[in-house]
Image (cartoon, rainbow, N blue to C red; front, side):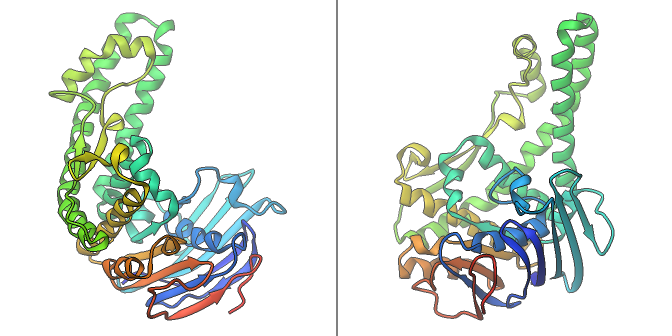
Length: 359
């Protein structure tokens, strides 16, 4: 079972300095009024374990306005050993991550090391938002369960950057040389991209029946939930890249490939994005995350750390209790303005006031 033993914060958002020691098992409830720093505390745990925020891609906002640098230090138990993780976030310099005083070769190595899943109100965007949100979700699962998948995703992103640079240089280059170069990069993208798609499809095939079962248990409805992969092309990727080349050169984009694919979510035979109510969409997003927790436990052989950021307040007592029952038993860090109804057992309660702990 993965668990955070302690985390020290210095100038992370509104946390000037604190030591947070959650319960290593069961629920730690972080309670306080809105705007006091509850979400920031959970975000710091996620950042330390993953190397990014579950709320924003802008790093400057993670640093306290009165400082130029935020520092995080944590002790984490994972896979029957204790590791020490350090992170620094700078407004002016390169960010750093250390695992046992050494930098990981890649941040994705850190994600593969520490299983963690966050739930937040923003998860509604998994259903309502653009395809990139859904691709990121399944890729995060692949990264956390397989180092080779993490390397494959890095390779696809690298190939796409090279193709983008090639497209931008095309107007100023010899057309024949551009064609030859694209032949090479088409081959690389076809191989790596097709393998990434295969792995995404395989992961969704494991996720879908589990999510369907959990949706029925949480919603208490018999509606079918289908989750399927849709490619941005027909046939073989290499053929599709060649077919779209002329138009892609004109637009300077790669219009087909794994970076353009989508994941379709269908509830009761209707597209959830367009036809499901907002409550149904939230329930779907939560059961998909819960299913990921269970698959992580199965595939990674480790119960993940779970962050529940102010989501139980949107559920009634029965659904709050049901959602907690869907999540594997382990360390759960929960934020709320008050202890939610339906939470029967709490290992520890800490109160937050203005970026300070009071319990």
